[in-house]
Structure formats: C-alpha cells, structure tokens
Length: 86
Image (tube, rainbow, N blue to C red):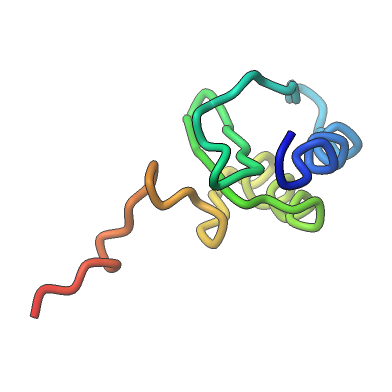
C-alpha cells in the first residue's frame, strides 16, 4: 500500500491487455523500493513504479516482450556495467 501502490494497480487494471492477469499481492518483501510490479512467468521485477510508467510497461513489456530497463529492480536484475573494475 505504500508509495501509491493502489494507483499503480488501478492503472494496470485499466490498461491490462487481453490474456494478462493483473492482481494485487501480499507483501513481496520489497516495500522500501515500492511500488513493486512483478511480471510472471519470466519473473521480471520493477521498482518505484508510478502510474505514469504503466503505459510503457504495458506497451514495451506486456505487448512487446521487452523489459523496461529504467524500471528494473537492481537487486533482482543487477547490471554488469554497474560495476567498475579499475
């Protein structure tokens, strides 16, 4: 419920593509980086999602099968280029 999760859920429910189930969940242990959206079955985690991010999530990920890299949860999807080896 933190950080506007209800608004994100409502935005997803309003824009859900045919054949996609959108549902709320109990705590996923990520409240500090919420609202969190988890897309299954590919188990992609998004963090700090805002209602205005939903159209891009729907278009790019749910319809286009391409994750929205700017919203990926860094704990679940670490980027190799984020590490510097100098």
